[in-house]
Amino acid sequence: MSERKMQPFSFFETRRLLFCVVSFSVFLLFFSCFTLLKSSNSNSLIPDSVLLLMLPNNTLASNARRIDRKHPPTTAPQGVRGNSGAQREKTTCDVSEAGLKVYMYDLPPEFHFGLLDWKGTRRNQIWPDVGNLDGIPRYPGGLNVQHSVEYWLTLDLLASNAPSIVRPCTTIRVNDSREADVFFVPFFSSVSYNRHSKLRGREKISRNNFLQDKLVKFLVKREEWKRWGGKDHIILAHHPNSMLEARNKLGSAMFLLADFGRYPVEIANIKKDIVAPYVHVVNSVGKDSAPFEDRPTLVYFQGAIVRKDGGMIRQELYQLLKDEKDVHFTYGSARGGGIKQAGQGMASSKFCLNIAGDTPSSNRLFDAIVSHCVPVIISDDIELPFEDILDYSEFSVFVRASDSVKKGFLVKLLRGIDRDEWIKMWKRLQQIAHHFEYQYPSTEGDAVQMIWQAVARKLSPLRLKLNKERRYSHDHD
View (cartoon, rainbow, N blue to C red):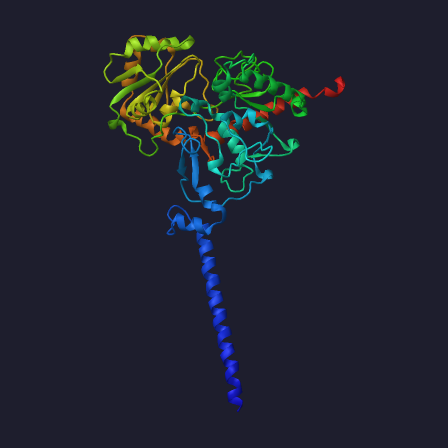
């Protein structure tokens, strides 16, 4: 009798035990999947298509793609490519750990992404959602890309506050101006010049000049500007003709420039300003760099030959080199596949000429660097990006302009550089080329991060100067 009473009890106990075992197994299964998702990378056994179904809001998709500046924009800014290396988990950047704290003014879109025809989807929206690559406006292609520094820096600052974006946390955007080391003015001055410098319709003042005037009026009224007279402000003026109307009034600021060719020394100089690399327009060779034997051309130059000012030397060099063996010196433009042709030519040449143009600098230098073609720099007044930490003589050949036009001098010099010496410079090019790559999200040591580091290096002597100026400020008060 007692045994019969125990049977139902045992049955329910068995069901309960089975339920616990099954539940625990399901829990382990989901926990294992979650762990795999967090540690997944390009070598994962689980296809991305499956992971996307399992992750909310497709966060993998937003972190697994990168905006690349190498190609003209199609459906995303400058093309989209996959992230290299293992996928990392995003951690929020800590303001206290950031080496450089930047306050960026919330200027209306007409000063930045609005110039790229971007319009927000929400009322009074100032910035695009940088966590969604498809929602970021495209930058104009072709040669416009070479001056797109303003675009990449602004995106990087926005990304520093975006939880889904993986980037270095050395620089961060702060919302309280009192916490800032430096102030960033997000005016896309190169786009403004390229697109809006000419009068249209019944305009009496160009859109470009109108925006510059409006910007000056805004800045000089700000307490942040008044504090140091704008000396701790970063203003973007990479195109040599940008900010022509405003540069004198804002000349106390830290300009981010391509060179100093069209500036008076009291407005722009290497002591206070930053030389930023052009964005290269040819494709990077990456790991497909041709060795010495696979570069049949000794010297390569393709571009505009008739130039003004210091660039007049191009015509003299053309006459000297056009008939030389193993030398490619010809006119070229970006049209009709010219950029692709130039990239192929540089990648199959040992030396690439970087000759002064209308200004001392040219994007051709950076095209050569990413082609691993040893640059031959013929520009006496050139200032080079990051030269305080990079020794360009390790991967470049410098020739004085006066020497370069001596008959036979240049070719004899370059033919005298033997294979071993060239390989040494070629290997160094491979080591430093990533310092001249612009991309989004930015990565450690790329052009964006190198520029922020250059800004940080300017701050110490600036603070010293400003603090010394304040020694007797109370006497004046």
